[in-house]
Length: 190
Image (cartoon, rainbow, N blue to C red; front, top):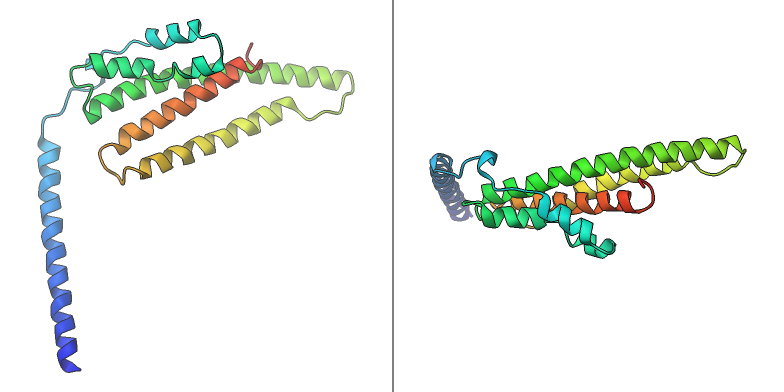
């Protein structure tokens, strides 16, 4: 029995030693990665939202509009010298995500104003219908939770690898674009 304990202690010490070695190696790799040259920041991106905007303008229906999401980011990744790097992909995806986010916010504000006006009309005539504004607000809040959870899941598929950042941004861009189009095309913001 004593021999088992001695062996157990020795093997545990060996495992701890190997863990320390791996941690030191990981630290060395991290230090090299932190000092390695990386592509310049966002100012070097070759980005134009025009390809996405033109696609949306020419799209005959909602599925065709959804297919436009990501066009500008894809063109940016191809045109930017370091567009195929993690930093380049992230920058291009984030630029298009910001476009969709601005559109979503504008469409949401327009829809809220219209919903409030519709609620006021219904109240004026004495209709007892659920509030369109409250339903819109609740829907948008729930959508934000859905978007965040979905993109967290997509990030987890990369196990914190270097593709996790671009995968998350791609997810945020795609879902934000879809919601922006929905709010703008559902008769809410028109």
